[in-house]
Length: 88
Image 1 (tube, rainbow, N blue to C red):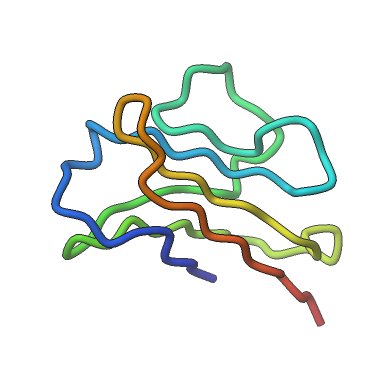
Image 2 (cartoon, one colour):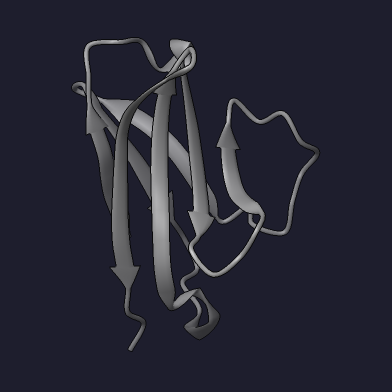
């Protein structure tokens, strides 16, 4: 499963991307990864043709919920995408 968070001309290395569930106080993914490996290694990030995209592999029923993807350039928030993941 893939979710587009932003279309940009900025190189991925210059961005900070944060993913979190709206009902939790901790981030699921932060790029670049400034924390040790977490339990959420199923999420990954890529930039292809200007699109910053989140990928989730091995989807589970427990992944169901509301998420925020925040993209920053330095201290400026470029975009926030809120999406509801429904697992059937």
